[in-house]
Image (cartoon, rainbow over all chains, first blue to last red; front, side):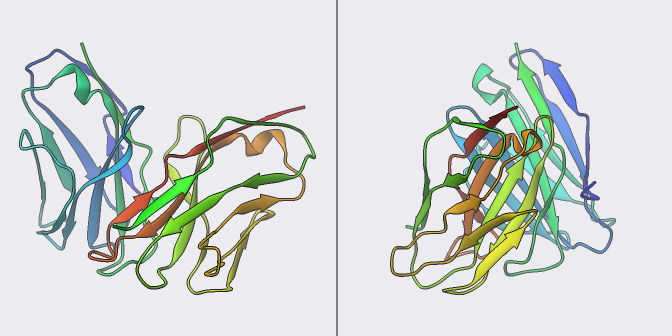
Length: 113
Length: 113
């Protein structure tokens, strides 16, 4: 158990819908990262938050957004969903800024039908 | 830009066979290097790491040596077990944002009894 909790584990939704994925980082970790894992793109970094503020953006679509709340949990919002958004979405957390070991959650498998 | 190249999978071995999964990288400078493992249905776990050239990371019988001459970080294990069946990812931090991990495409290992 990495200590990073993601909910829900599975999500099935229709095209055009909006979903929210939730991540609770390990106790004491201030950084939260979101990654997307798909068969054709592999593991792609989406976005990082540190202590409530956005720190880095990767290949995140405009239809996607995220935030980190004062209690340090994070949510990834995916809207106007398309079939191609079907993927495994991972959250990871680490202690601070600059690279330190990141601990990954078990992921949320999103299926868009 | 920084990148990681891994050998294509799947790698299929019998129990107790020797394992090598190749990983080469392109990077400016000498970043830390990581191997992550993803067991079926689970998130990624850090398997081992090396922080500077010539370092050897090791864990659970796996080893990888950071070789700057060949820009490689090959993963090896002398005797694999069925329980090692998983997907293995080589990774390094982005030069421009060391919080962001750049992953290889992953190599699936299947070990049969």
